[in-house]
Picture 1 (spheres, rainbow over the protein chains, first blue to last red):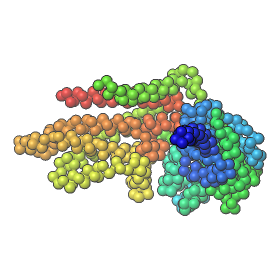
Picture 2 (cartoon, chains in turn brown, blue):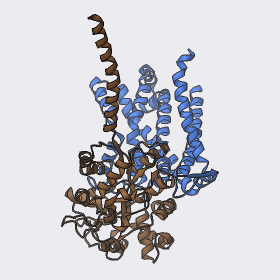
Picture 3 (cartoon, one colour):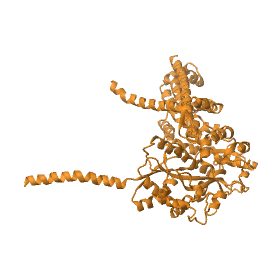
Picture 4 (cartoon, chains in turn orange, yellow):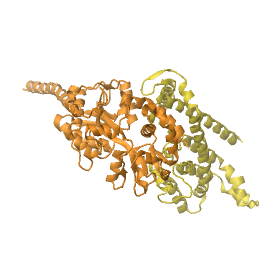
Length: 350
Length: 263
């Protein structure tokens, strides 16, 4: 009897040793998350709420986020090249060119992205990265602190705005391009706008390095006129700050497109494609527009009436073409260091 | 005994590897629009030894010297009161007020200064926010608690009997201070000045936020190169130049201090 008991116990232990690791392995596999790299704050919260939760409900794949600044995440991706810590990356369209240049992105499998057929042509950035939403950099101002109407880019040069304007210093490409366009050039012949930019210098009170700084400058009235991201301007409006977002009559706003890509070497490429496809769907795009106040990349997405026609919200191919100026990503990534150097030496420096 | 040195040597090795990587990056070519780097070159050093970047170095050294001097002047009376106030309650309150800024982060303090220096609360006769003046005020405020504590420690070691003896021999209070208290508190002045000067050389959030992009110190320029221009080799080269400069300056000041102590 005892020998049978001993046999039973040993048998049980052997079975447990075999079954438990197998069950564990199966469990780990099923729970193996899709890791998404994105900016923190509202960006991550919105994507988590609007995309990740329904994605997990639909596929059973949990989603984890790695959050950080644009360049922090790029640096991390670089050191983890070949064995990425994340599966899917969100970043700006021109910074994505840096990922591509270093072989950090895998080519997209368009057969796995059926929703991409509904996208605006401008959202298909390359064979590696695809747009998720759009916005523009345009003129934003506080009518309670600036008495005259601003309706055009050229209004920034009015002497009455002396000491009132703030510009981004981390990326002066928007104002450099606008100045070049005003002088008959473009971002590739940006030198044409240099003299015009020098004339703007007395009007600039501050340069901001982050979105938060830009919003603080506007809230406190330190810089009541700014070249600003529309997403931030709409966010300020929601907070009760009465800012006016200008649809410039002379030249369009400078479009920014945030993009998604699958990391090279990821083992979750299929899940990453499913996630991207979900972001591109009409339903999710509509919710993203509502929440982020950014423009949809899917031209079939419904847009709330109050946002229709607003700067940065493009709903038709014609609007994409006429109401926004899209810079060449590659040229922008290549020329940005030169732009910054010139801008810092000639405009920022007193 | 040698085993006890192992953790320190381990930390040293990690720093050496990081510095090695910095040096390595500083001598490879930057390719605009790419994370790839080119072959070996000294071009990065030539770029950062231009007038623009030397201007940042100059601004940083001038701001650091001014911060050190103003912090010393502003902190000495507080430190003296902290060490010598007859009332224990006054000393306790002074200590609490001195330590209070340590309990708020540098970013929070700097944002508070944005409100104070801007024309939102007070209308200042001269612009302060986004100017060197504003950055200097922020740096002095940031440095004062440490300077006060170092000075107070030094002043508390000065025997009051010496000051009383000088006074009994007919020296007026100002002369007692100049000839007795000040020289005897020199170790605190030297150590406080070295600490404040060293960390102001590497100041980042204060000039970043209070300078409004117009006032740039070395750390801000390195960040601009690395994070905004994606020019990591250039940033590494400027960091190496800044490191060398800091070592030279600190070495020089250290020698001066050692010479003074020997006297």
